[in-house]
Image 1 (spheres, rainbow, N blue to C red):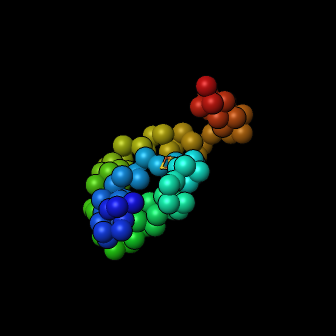
Image 2: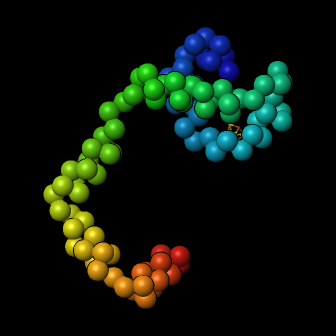
Length: 93
Ligand code: SF4
């Protein structure tokens, strides 16, 4: 919260990347604020105004364009209901 008070939004956003927004920190916060909401705010501001290059996304787009998933996509589109149902059950395990 000190970093947030100092306006270090990128630092706050980074600290909250693993936050699951459970809110438990709010229950024990000494100054009775909701730290996870501050973290979410910092993450949103950082993403909106200081976005990093989405290297993972760009890599995946290149994979799609190269045809890496073409056969899987064809299999999926040609599957009947029974095959899709089997596939979904296999993914649940
Ligand atoms: S909401 Fe608070 S306690 Fe829950 S994961 Fe995020 S920082 Fe941790």
